Image (cartoon, rainbow, N blue to C red):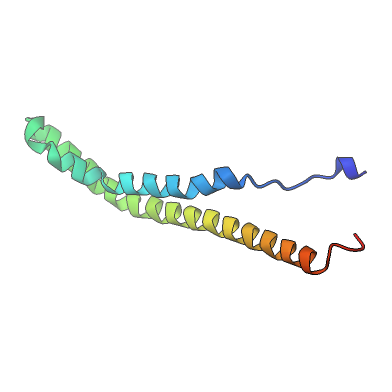
Length: 103
C-alpha cells in the first residue's frame, strides 16, 4: 500500500516567489490613487475627474481589506518556507549526529 499513500508536496521554489509577488501586487494596488491624480489635468471633463475621484474613494475603502489579506498570505508563505527549511536542517542534523544507523 505504500504506493497508494498520498504525499504532501510543497513547491518551495514557487512558494518563495509567491510572497514577493503578493507584496508587489499590494504595492502597485496602493499606488493606484496617486496614478489617477497625475492625469487629472489631461482628463478634461470634470465629470470624468469626479467619476475617477469617486472610484478612488471607494477603492480606498476596500483596498485596506485586500492589502491586509495580501500581507497575511505573504507572511504565511514566508512562515511555510521558514518552517520547512528549519525542519530539513533539524532532520539533517539528527541524521548526521545519529550516524543514520538503524534506518
